[in-house]
Image (tube, rainbow, N blue to C red; front, side, top):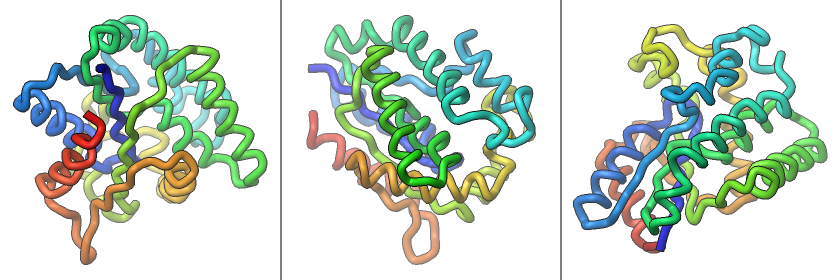
Length: 223
């Protein structure tokens, strides 16, 4: 039976690393696995996302209406689903996604402070992507809880995924936005009952292997 597993978290929380480790672990154990990363920068479907993150529509994330920005990411997502994900799921494979609809819930909802308006937005995203665009809902969403100060340190060591430069996108360079996204991620994770994994213990980032083991122990419960 197919499964859709999502690895979520704020920027530089280790999503790509843990997605790869989980993919390799499941493959070694004999599972038929497929992985995908969002935004899908290797596809033309991410063009509007790239323009947004590069600052073409405004130098700050808050310059772009969350409904508009969410639509950019949703279009990329549905195009990738149709061309890359739909068939593997149909064949019963396990699909691991580095980000998903869940990222719109984290990042774009963080632009909204009013709780009533935030809830309306969360309902809109869920309806738009899962119902209107007919994207499958995840069987499991794992939230990597990486506090912003630690994520910022990790961010300094990685390249921009859009063009492999050391230039940060409009989300990454805005510390206040990252803090709002982190706080909102906890709000959303609690609301939608995601599985949280703490990436920091005793004021130190846990080892990649330690986090990976906890992820696998969580995932194997639904397989």
